[in-house]
Length: 126
Image (cartoon, rainbow, N blue to C red; front, side, top):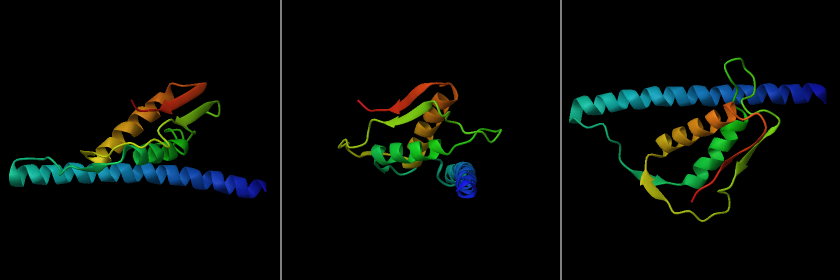
């Protein structure tokens, strides 16, 4: 049904915008927390936690698929395939900040999509 497909597309846009807004709010909260820690303890470092890069890559690809630009156009063109070359790999956890890792991978992925008109954007590990 045409109406259902249009509704799903609009919901995807709402989801993408809400994810971007959530990320922005989270970044502001992290900045505020870091400033508070700096003023209270003199150090803004967060406690390291186990980071699962495979989960981060999966999350980033899902977020990127529904991402839109400032003009509300899909960030990923129909002629571009997002590829997860990490899926199925047994990757070790490593200590770090999962949120910052997610932000880094998301920024790299969305920047790659902005400059890719045809082909694929892949995430892999070595």
